[in-house]
Image (cartoon, rainbow, N blue to C red; front, side, top):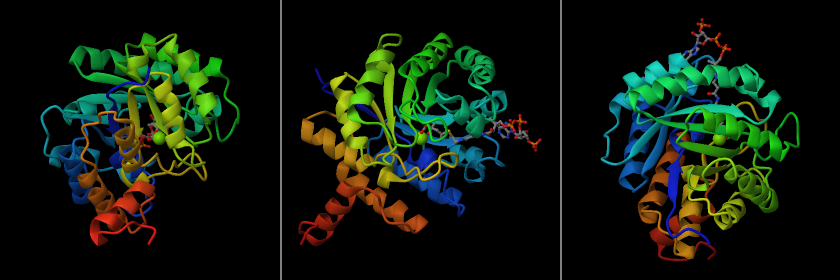
Length: 307
Ligand code: HMG
Ligand code: MG
């Protein structure tokens, strides 16, 4: 049975913006996060505490976290690949830290410069420190549905990393389709297998939309009982270590899907499409959200987008 309610994790401020070549001002990032939480997103992935040499766009993570207006009940998450990142996150009073690994060895090397086994060893102290500090811990597993370097990723490899992340005490685990190659059948297979080793209600779907399959894959994931989905307003994003990869599925498209299914999200779609327009203008790129563009045209002109 599909769930009656889902949590949407808005990853636009982090996954969406991290790949922008031009530096997006700290003020714009703060306004984006504030508007997203006001629109009802209960979990916003705000920034990363990673090496600024690797991801220069996230170099202002501490300033972003210091500048946002915290909304009661909203979880502000940040990426922390190591203890240095965790210390920054703790100082910034992040509600949730995200360790990020991969189901593919090649991608692990490209993204975080170490093997899967080495990454887990690096995450161990982060996980322990998060538990000691009472901070939520999430793990993201890249290339769960395919890898830009290795191609096919066996379901068993994903399950293996889910088990290792689960052993670290993760509150949530993301099954990430980094390059958007996944199809509905594969999505169901991977999620069904992952659900056998980690509670399904704490697994999330993180789908990039490169092949236009993300909304379909979310629908497939709903059939597997998945209740948490990641999305990026205006479909912002790409991946610096996955050539040709586009952004995450657009949040507007996901909310539109959920509204049509009668699934509660708590998100105000009207506010969301205005935010999509705001950030698209701020970075000078058209929105990648189909629903966002159609609804914005309708809202502004009082007509359907096709006329
Ligand atoms: P490294 O070079 O192997 O490690 O990088 P290092 O310990 O030798 O550090 C290198 C330099 O970075 C040193 O500075 C460190 O001090 C500094 P230097 O001495 O050269 O001046 N450093 C840091 N600075 C700030 N904060 C830190 C930090 N750690 C080290 N936390 C490392 C290893 C993991 C640090 C590096 O590879 C890195 O930062 N990678 C970031 C990768 C990243 O952010 N990728 C994008 C996010 S993941 C993603 O998008 C996928 C996801 O969306 C799911 C999906 O779609 O698949 C989550
Ligand atoms: Mg991603």
